[in-house]
Image 1 (tube, helix red, strand yellow):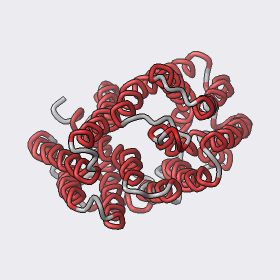
Image 2 (cartoon, rainbow, N blue to C red):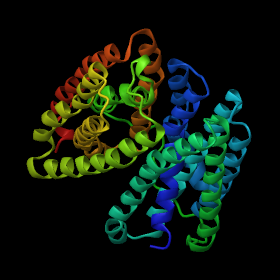
Image 3 (cartoon, rainbow, N blue to C red):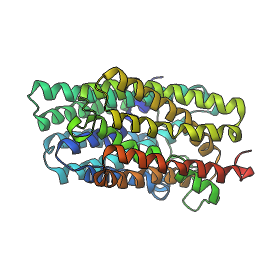
Length: 389
């Protein structure tokens, strides 16, 4: 308990920065919708390429050394971001570097957890680990975004200065993490052999189709939906302030996502994965349907928006549980996780460009149609009895 919660909180925080906060930052710096999502898609590259660089990482330094090194570099990177917020090319390069450090930190944390603890202890602490990571997401999407919004009001919408203060705060947080983990994280003394499989591990074609297509609709809308929530009403969005966005997505949304995931896992345990796949695939279409409604009506009441986001995240958490369960059953080493990252990266890169050519309502209708790929992937994977045993 001295190091597992803090390590996994530190694991989740920079991931939120590069996948969520970067969207809001780049959009506020004046980038177009297509440019913003295209740049953010690049931040998934370290995870896509992970099967090729992970073996070198786990055999070069000890896991503890990688944890401390990446946290120190994250602190320095956030400090550097605070100085260059107005310089978009430099901001992009630093965010890409932070994404790389985040992927390295994730590998080091997971390897340390696997090597330091026995199977029984890992099983006992799995909920502590997951709760800590979800708490980091809630703080990043909620508290940090609300803080930026309050600072922008306080400093008369001085966007650059507000984001600079936020990055100074993140730098201070990671300095604390570095100092605490320097004391608390155990040292193995030697670099133990790793069972990490490299990229030559194979996957059946049905599994590849499922990994790439099951979550296609939510992946397409994930970044555009965030920008849609904060986009002004005159541009077709909902016009949420950063404070309202933090409340809706950072608290209600994360809570609904956790509940949905728990319900999905229990549902699979009760009826089996084969029987659960169809209803859970249908649940993956619900988020797109809800955003079709929101973009059509543009409700002005925060209560209505909050209820819709709660339902959307609940359905997504429920449906995505099938993806995570099947992912855990698959062989293929890091290749399966690379395909998962690729299934997020490619839709992210294309979604903003597509939304720019239409409007938000048309985009979410198209996303709903893209979601039919989820049903196709379920039909394909259900034919492979070996995967569903």
